[in-house]
Image (cartoon, rainbow, N blue to C red; front, side, top):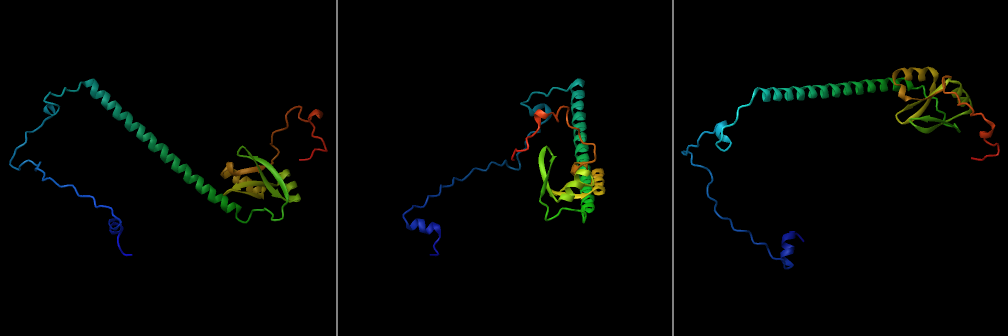
Amino acid sequence: MSNSLKDQLLGLGFKQVPKPERKPEASVRPSPKAVQPKTTDRTRHGGKPKPRQTREEIDLARAFALRTQQEKRERDAAEQAKQIAAQQKKAAKEQVGKLLDGGILNAADADIARHFSYGGKIKRIYVTGGQLNALNAGELGVVQYNGRYCLTARETVLAVRALLPSLVALYCDGNEEALPEGYDDPKFKVPDDLIW
């Protein structure tokens, strides 16, 4: 069982591939005593002299080099600004985490779903009856933190709004959009017997 795969294949009747014969190669290196002719810019390109650059070509090359340097500086500045913004956002998220530490009011026995729009989608948070009234009155708010919707006090929501407004998912402060004109028209009224 300790035979190698090669031995096993040879035992089954496979033939070994013959190795190609090596031909002695002639030495390509020039002898150290041979002197090579010097090449210059004029003779490097097939013996034809290289045309001299005009002043316009030199100025054009310098302008391209300056433009390339300027674009590189702009890219570097944009990258640095991006990194600074990322560091500031990270620090603000850490502060939000400290604000939310111990201030999350999500109840385990909550059974009422409060739907709200956040990030262009309809989201929901489960609250109790008292929390629902406080949430609609503006005494409580919802903050999105680490993929979770946290029910918090008004002061915490306002502090989070000052740090990172994009994390405030729901806060009813009375400045919400009013219903459009004609929305309470009786022909658009939802019937009482409608079952969802």
